[in-house]
Image (cartoon, rainbow, N blue to C red; front, side):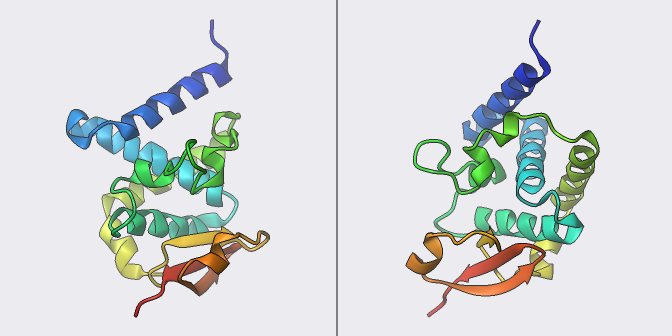
Length: 168
């Protein structure tokens, strides 16, 4: 009999493989489930302690990346971009956090929020609380990409600082 962590790891691997599969291979229901699972993981692990405003801001970045040239085109591919081949866009995708036990109440509330966000993606993008951000980091880290990329800081929401690509 597999342990709970073993089952969680298996589910994560399944969601990751589904995310990498061509979109045409997945049924609409399977794709919707994968989108919600990947968005939930992104929100839970990147902004779970930030409250709803912080989680929505992170969701906005994930959604915006999926429609911005130069980024992957699905939520799962955005969330797991680079994992594990050349470094993760989101640290939890490489540090093993997603296979550790989760707080059930926070996971359930994050799952529900992700579902609401996915029902009206455009409303999140139209609200534009991050001012067109496609990058963010926690205020307690000093990322090396910030100085080497052509980005400008937009806002800070909770413990996250957001950046958009500079326009000419």
